[in-house]
Amino acid sequence: MRALIVVPTFNERENLATLVRMLLEHPDYTVLVVDDGSPDGTGDLADRIAGESGGRVRCLHRSGVRGLGLAYVAGFTEAVRSGCDVVCQMDADLSHDPLELQGLIDMARSHDLVIGSRYVVAVEMPRWPMYRRLLSRFANAYTRRLAGLTQRDCTSGFRCWRREALERIDLTAIASRGYAFQVEMLVAAARAGMSIAEVPTSFRNRARGVSKMSAAVVAESALMPWRPSLRRAAPSTGD
Image (tube, rainbow, N blue to C red):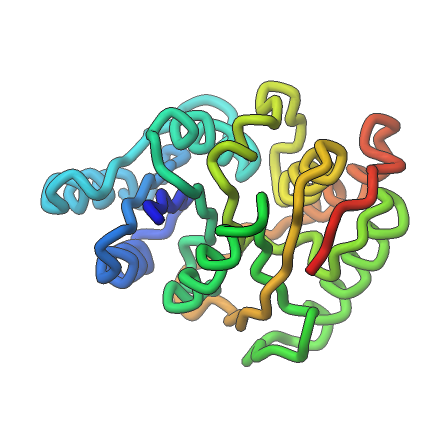
């Protein structure tokens, strides 16, 4: 299956080349970098990588209001026009293992959305401080209860969508700017009656660069499930 991997970036110059090199080792992968005007030159690096990739890497440069959710909306909008079979999403900081991506893609042959999950089984999360582990588990339990979701890892940013399924979501209606985007998209998929599976994946804390987590991001993620339009999501099929 032809996979387009959407990678949003903001100040990821130290990690991007390594990630793209690993992804391009698979002949059926192409990459769309969505850079949010990184002041560290990530966008310039992405352009150079794209120029040497033989058309397998493209860079979309965003301006204006920054945010992970806004970057993904822009990237997904481009992706659904690409003619690929599946659209994948992953972080640029190497916390998601590119070698595990094929497992998500294989599962997408029979599901609309596949989530790389940290919680369907015990997975490796080296160097994650205890407060991050507790915050993540609480956020998922909190989100499942308020939004009516059944998936174990509602906040994972490691996902694979069938392109036809992603086309069924009105991306213009997505309101979240930060990490809450992951939950809002999952709610939209559940309400659309999509078949949703989770596969176990590892997760590693970033080794280089600075985390984008902030008080504002945490606040948006906490408030998002309370939006009336996102509550009582239809249960989805989990595997």
